Every structure is written in structure tokens, then in C-alpha cells.
Length: 221
View 1 (cartoon, rainbow, N blue to C red):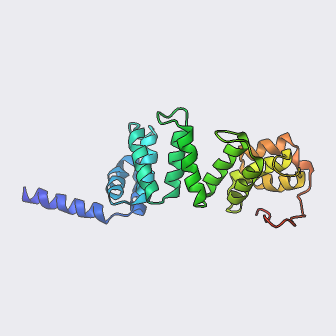
View 2 (view 1 turned 90 degrees about the vertical axis):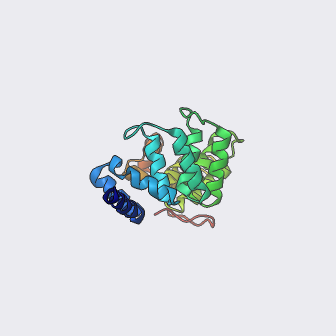
């Protein structure tokens, strides 16, 4: 009994000494199941990266039985600790019609929270709400502004959305050269949105815009 207690104590100490990077390495080398107990231990210690990874594991039935309730609980906890990725994923949980938590208003409010904290994917998402008139009145200028803020941080999805806005002239004056420049990187990376805009507006035939003289934005990389 004493030996078992000692072994157990050593095991517990070993788990407590683990970091998220250790757990991630174990997952990569030996699979999710081997790393699961470490993620759980770290999550109880308020390690936000472990909470986020666990939330993804619980929401994906590929590895263990799906548990959206547990996933939501972890995302909420990490979100309160200002982990923007968790806040964003929580918003997407409410946004999905396949989720038992589907609630557009709640999703919008969660995305707004992350957007106000300058998280690019959330800014891009709120931009889409305004561009498509979902839950809010259609406002292309607001959409463009949000896409710009996300694009400045290098978010390709936002650059693809800006390419569409400039190609279609929604919220801005039509400018196919500018649309070309915003879409080019995404097309190279295989982004579906950029590829569609590139094809639909035949952006390949336009030269990139060299007249970036307006004050509120600088050209994408």
C-alpha cells in the first residue's frame, strides 16, 4: 500500500509539473487520449490553452464521445480569462444551427466583445453580420471598416471580404485594381472566398491598384 501511495504521489507531482507544451508534444507523438489527463489537470489550474484545446476535443467526436456542454463550459471559463480564441469559438458555437445552443443574438454579442478587444476574426465576423444584414440593418460602410481593421492584422479572410466589397462597390467606390490586390494573397493560399471573387469579377485582368493615397488604410502585404 505504501509503495502504491508513493507511486501515486509521484504521478500526481509529475502531472502537476507538466506544461501545455508538454501535453501538446505527447498528443502529437502518442495521440489525444494519452494527453487528455494532462490537459484536464492543466485546465483545472486555469491554463487557458489547455481549456481551449480540451474544448475542441470535446466538440469533436473523432477522439472521444462528443460533449458540447463540457466544451461550452470550458470556453466560457477561458473567455472570462480573456482568451480571445475561446471567446470566438464560443460565439461560433452559438452561431451554428447544428448546435443545441444556437442563438444568433448571443453569438453576435460574443463576437462584439472579442471585436472590441481588437481580435481580427471577430471583427471579420461582425463585418459579415453588417454586410449581409443578419440581425442588424445592412451597413456596408461599417462592414468595410471592420474588414479593414481585421485586414490590417493580416487576416486573409478579411482581405478576401474587402476584395469583394471593392469589386462589387458595396460601401466603397468600385476599384477592381484594389480588389485584385486584396484577393491575390488569398488566391495564392487557396482561400475559397478569394478564389470566388477572383473568378466572378475576372480580377486577373486588372493591374493592382498603386494609388493607396487615402488616409484610413494602407495596402495589404
